[in-house]
Length: 396
Image (cartoon, rainbow, N blue to C red):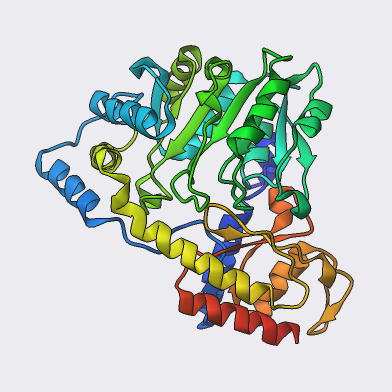
C-alpha cells in the first residue's frame, strides 16, 4: 500500500533515538554479535520482591476490571502521601492523575495545554521525547543551550532571554536525563523569580529520577508557594523501583490540568493497568530505604565509569549528581577518521561505537546537544569495564 496515505503528522515524527538504537543493538545480537547495551534508560535490577508479591496478591484477589481513568482512589492516596513525605507538596486527590507511564503523562499535559504556535522552553540537553511530544501536540520547542562547564543547567538569565509572548510552558527534568544534573533549591528559586514576571507560563517538572540522587537532597519547583498553582509535577515508578515495564506514572497539578489530562486519557487509553496499580501502592508506601541498595550501586558505577572515561582520549565529562547516565562531550573526535570512517558528529561517533566496538550508546543530537553522547551505566560493573575497554581499543 502507498505510504502517502499516512498523515503528515506521523511522517514528520521522528522515531525515538533511544528505542531505535536499542533495536539496532538487538539486530546485531540476533546475528550473533556480543553487543553491550548502554543505550536504554532501564535499571538492570529486578523489581523488588515485596512489590512483585503485591502484584501476585492483586491477581489472586481478582483485580481484573477496568480501573478508574485517573487511578484507584487508594493509589492516589498513596501518591498524595508520597508527595507530602518526600516533596512537602500538598495535593488533593483531584489534583492527581495516574497514567500509563510518565511518558503518557507528559503527552497528556502537552495535548491538554498547547495550541498551534505555543512555545515550550526546553533547556538542552532534554529527554529525547520532549521536543517531539511538544511538536506532535502543535507546540513549538524552544531550545536553550547549556554547556558542560555549566553542568548542563539553564540559568535564570538564559530563561529570561528565551521567553516571548508565545511562551506557554517550561519543561525540564531534575535529576536530568541525559546529563544527570540536579537543580538546587537556589537555582530553582532564581528560575522561579524570573517566572513571577510571566504568570501565565506553566512549568512541567519531570522528577522521575528523584530518588536516584547522589547529592543528598531533592527539591521540587512546586514546593515554592508562588509556583505551586502553576507547576505540574511528573513522576512514576519506572526508574527508582526498577518497574519500567509496569508502566505507571502520575502527576500532581493544578486541578484544572489534572482534570483535562483525565478527560483526554478517558478517550485514548482509559485507566492504567489494574495489577500494576495495586503493586505501586505497596511500592510508594514502603520506606525509601527499601530501594537504597539500587541507588548505592548506581553511585558506585558512576565512580567507575567516570574514572574510566576521564582516562579515555577525547571524552570530557561533568560529574552527574543523579539518574544513571554520563553525557560526555566527544566533539574532540569530530573531523577525525577511525576505522576508515570520518566522524562528522555525535551520530557518527555513536554508530562507530555500535558497529566497531559493539557498544550501544545514544547520540546527543537526540537530546538537543550535538557534541555529546549519552551512556547509561544501568549495567553491571563488568559490562561497563568491558564496554570502555572496547571503546578504547577501537579509538586506538
